[in-house]
Image 1 (cartoon, rainbow, N blue to C red):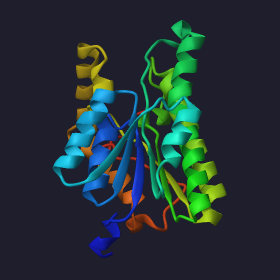
Image 2 (image 1 turned 90 degrees about the horizontal axis):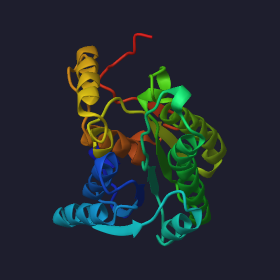
Image 3 (image 1 turned 120 degrees about the vertical axis):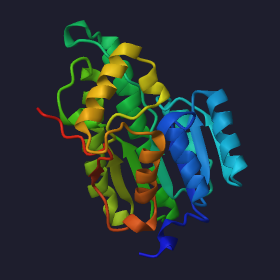
Length: 254
């Protein structure tokens, strides 16, 4: 396929979680491909840094300081775009605790951000795309954690598994509107979110995953951003309801 299939000139993208990590890498890459990018996050300083990076490459960025669990504010931000072609719902948090120590408030917070926040972004962007008659692309962020049991990751894994079901259901419902919906399920990626955890435990986890990966490394945010770009552009025009797994070839042994 011609490389023009990756050209996003004259298209508008909305990226949640754009202040750091995979969200920032995605916002910058979509801008580099020619899209005007609306960047949303609670971290205002991080958003400013993302906008600066996009400005430095000659791109166009608009920032929104917004909590994805606040549907009203998120709706206002999404519908502020004159036209919306791409939604990348990336905002998320990670919580670790054994099942017997998991509190209701822990589960509620993770589900509110990692599932309901994605649901809000998908619903509002889909409404905007349908109203404008856009042949849009919605990309959600799942995780390799949904594929196997990981001690301490119940809340996170459950929320990401729910995102997959949301993605498949939306793909079925929005297909008649020419709107594609796909998910990206990364393996371990070195981001500010993963860096917040105990350094020794993180080192042990990364070392184990490196040994299990044919590529012998963990992921970087840019690795995942390129997968999002593929799903956002015309190169994947016949792809919907799919879960792409950029994980370095890791296959869990259980």
